[in-house]
Length: 347
Image (cartoon, rainbow, N blue to C red):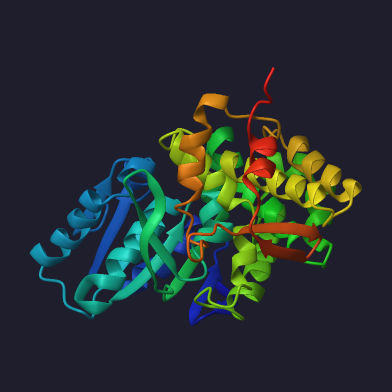
């Protein structure tokens, strides 16, 4: 394995294949707690003990499952020098890192992401979380992993739905840098990406993580407004996910939310109509629903979910609005603009 990036003390290593990954993992020893979901647990046979296997899906990102992880660590007499190892997508990485951050006030954590979203985004930057009362990622900490191990072989087995769920993040990162290299790959190599060509995927994930690092390094705890750019679209998206009781996948909601963000920018004259149209065309090109509207009767529920956004200051919700490639502005939006963007018009 080779280290290609270091962010907030997290070493990010890229494996050639599963054999390379397995050899490296074998160096961790037995003082570990493995956390997987019901799908990824099948990737390691036999699965080292102790371990916790959570049901796959966003519903496992809960206090109940967090308690299972901590209880297993205690029952296994693991000390502060132990290592929690997460093998799975964003849900597994988030909840395992959160558990590690609070177990004995912090133990080591290794993340082995197995989905596109986790590889290209969720595993880097130190954000940990669980959902609570249908609010997404509302409880959590900042706790960078010790290592992140990337092996694109695991992307071969993902369903097309799960693959595309994470790909929205890569599209987003291509819009957050003035460097066109990622955008150009996405525009020109769709077939190779959809065919899961390993070298293309490695290039896309590597550049995507470098984009994220550039924001995280300059604002690690999201206090300066710099790192908030990475959440473009999430204010719109998380409200939709929460309103639907998490029936919308994170990636599909994120893609929709980014399109709402650039539409808001166009409404306010912050971006050109051409830039807005180009962003929407990019997401539509990869098959995302960019035109969805909520029912008029759901407006108050949606508005209530918006109010829970973590970027809210003194009760005012702030939106990240793209102005151009690599340029953004953070500001509140009038309800009437949000309504126009997300809701079916009156007849």
